[in-house]
Picture 1 (cartoon, rainbow, N blue to C red):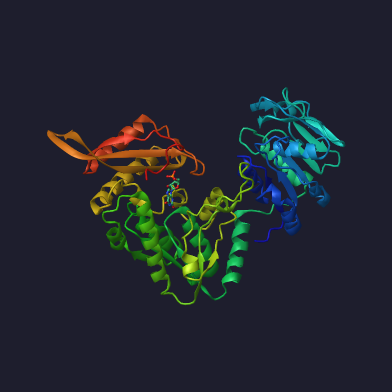
Picture 2 (spheres, helix red, strand yellow):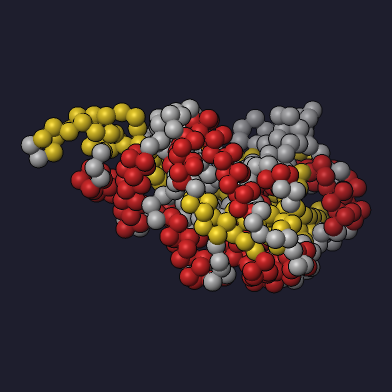
Length: 516
Ligand code: XMP
């Protein structure tokens, strides 16, 4: 998509690189992340309005350290270096970086802010708290640079070239622990680089609707609708562009949560008037899964069967030339790995594997420039319901990977009821949005209990709730005991077949979020 102004973020491997891109977008400016090694190629092709160099784990003196190509200075584009980015700038321009043995980590207060600083314009010196996370530091500034801030431990906490075109900060303005970070970034974007803030979700909707219309023409488009946030928002967007030329297909594989099909119907058909093709294929899936207990085999069977059902259904529509998918920006960013050089980490979770090739379809991925929080904002702007837009992620193989052992309709009914109770109570406790994912797992274990005067011998279920930002790592959620108590009481009392609940207190790694 074409953007009026564009900030290029060069990735040197920091864990915060995505945050920089998000902060810039929150300021109303479109930004993209690319590996540092592709700097010149991207600059020539795209002419960014400004460049930000991210932090990174290396020391500038490491033999393999990612360097800054000095040709970058020939383009006369304003540059801001953050942490390692500052060190790389100083090193390239004739300054000196000290290789420290200890790290400085945590909050610090800036002192001696230069009255000539443009980065700190409008900020009160005494109050500027910043977040530090670095080892090395710049100790001699390059010629024609002014030191514009210090901290007690860092003699050069910010540097600005006299002409204002190049600046850098040792701290991290992109993290929440630097409360004035947004103001500092805004000074760079608007006062130094003189960019107009034109990026917003409504401008995104306008341009993406016209782009989809132009690309599709009078052809038809199919899309797999899962009931999750990404595919629902994608369908709402593409529908706004091409209306009935879009055919969203919702395959009920029998492995969905309670009332999921009904919820999709309400969210898209009743609220937005989007006609969804509902396919009840549950008996086909359950038949194929009979007797299967191996998790990877379950995944393979479900994936293959999905492709078959979807293809059969999609081929009923005439003139279909495109498949629309809800791929997001974090799935397409090529991030930098310092162990094996720059590498592409592209997840394929969202992709309906193999379908575009089998059906000879071109892909439309209208969300591939967006972060998850932007997708949620987009969903609301397109008229989707809050509760859908904030739903926890749900895996493609569904409840099949949450029933350990064989999948039967009896076990599916049990887990659906238990899971619905847990979700209901978590919502009532006001915890739903604080948790990345919460669900119930049905274990292939029975235990003895007593109900009334009778002995019971029923399943054990595990309650799992985790904190995470991207599902790659996760910590178990410290759920209040009162909430656990009510969930456990209700499940044991209301769901026939479960007489014991345990809480999963393992983090990822070394465990995973799902049990299979
Ligand atoms: P794990 O269990 O690997 O899960 O820690 C990380 C995230 O991915 C989801 N997940 C899947 N999603 N197909 C999917 O579409 C899958 O096969 C699959 N396995 C796990 C999981 O729910 C969590 O959000």
